Amino acid sequence: MSAAERSLRGRAAIVGVAESSLGEVGPGISSLDLIGQATVRALADAGLSKSDVDGLFTHSAFFAQPVLTTAEYLGIRPRFADGTATGGSSFVGHLWHAAAAIEAGLCEVALIVYGSTQRSHGGGLVASGAALTRSWETPYAPRIPASAYALAAARHMREFGTTREQLAEVAVAARQWAKLNPAAFVQDDMTVDDVLSSRMVSSPLTVRDCCLVTDGGGAVIVTSAERARNLPRPPAYILGAGEATWHMNISQMPDLTTTAAQESGRRAYEIAGFGPQDIDVVELYDAFTINPILFLEDLGFCAKGEGGAFVSDGAIAPGGSLPVNTNGGGLSYCHPGMYGILLVIEAVRQLRGEAGDRQVARHSLALAHGNGGTLSSQVTAILGDESTL
Amino acid sequence: MTDNVRADVESLSPETAPGTVFDRYAAEGVLAYQSCGDCRQAVFPPRVLCPSCGSDDLGWEPSAGRGTVYSATVIAPRGKEPYTVALIDLDEGFRMMSIVTAGDDGAVAIDDPVTVSFRLAGDEPPLPVFAVEADR
Ligand SMILES: [Zn+2]
Image 1 (cartoon, helix red, strand yellow):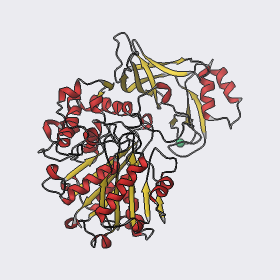
Image 2: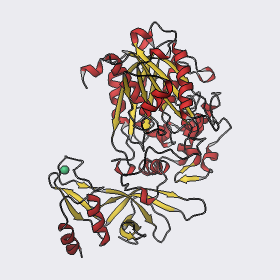
Image 3: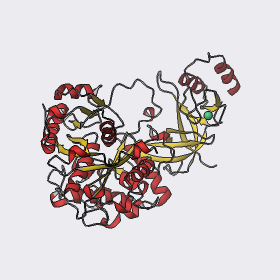
Image 4: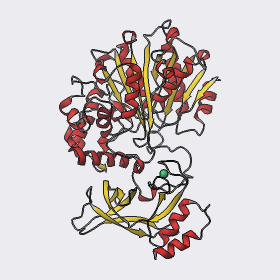
């Protein structure tokens, strides 16, 4: 790793965060409207105005050129724009790209934004562009993305004895956190048995092992650490990040039980100067219940193969040994096609101590981990308050 | 048969799209893969460079069509027959997604030995699919 990358540690901070309307926004509201809502609210949170924004970072499955469509709608003419498109992890990647761009002087105030009306559009994942490239998987009709994660779960069960009950524990923990979050889409009681007895989508995953399909969006404002200190909200410093991409199609993933989070996490920890034992609160992209199990292993919170045991007995639920997905996650809070922006927002709220009933006790250091594609892109960011600099 | 297919394929222009060569083999009932002339890596899906070493010296080899199930998932669409989508590790060292039909016990399990066959559907290229071997 270069000295230049290392020197980005703590040089930029998140100074504003906001969600758009979430859940089911109804007909007429477009994904651009949600992008607009989130932008207005995040700028207000940051104490900045739209004219301060000179860097735009976005991705969407709704537009072919997301940066252009979004900039036009918002009335922003960014001097630096980044449309990095690695699926749901994109927005965690944007965070690190924004830190680098700000440090290089390419922009001063970065807006990272996303909005989607996937639920109001009838469910299915909105695809980016037409399928003009031959797929070597589609002819077999896997239910993508669910089947890809199901294959990983099945292999994890085979290699390590992970059980369906342990997968279900992840969904139950998420639901318990969601009950503490007024913005969560589903809040009703749910047990391990409820998860196991739900409709099977792609074995061993039932519909309750799968994330929600909701509308929603969010925005994050990033600026230099110097400027952040003169703004109203406590800065969430970007202490380090790592991005890793090993494949796109699940059939090309070398080992279904080891994700690229192993690499992204190692680099993020190295830059931040912290390890898993130091992290107070963890936000992991939980598109499916196998995800947190894989990521807890690959990010060093437990040994490879022990993720199932690690999440058992409420360990990641409220009151457990490690707070994971404190907003209720993609499984119970909100999953608008891509979830990455929302896990960054939750990490910042926890660091600020403004998470209400779900606020964790110690909250100086947060890890936000994004996943994209079919376990394809992994991006880890470590955020901290002033004491961690 | 394989020798005839090989002669047929070798008569193709070297610029022929890799996917087209694959289909030409498949039309004769052969599951083909590429082998890197520099690092010997087995390569699938077909492409124009070796994803391992970057060499463009890729030659075609016939697979024996036998492998093992690396992972599997059952999909049961409402009102339709359930089917098993699996990742198959071929004995020659490449992996592909496919559909696997079960053996006598009705289930497909990880590590089951499987053999290829080709499914024909309309104008589509013949599709390699797999079945669990009864005894191997
Ligand atoms: Zn090679």
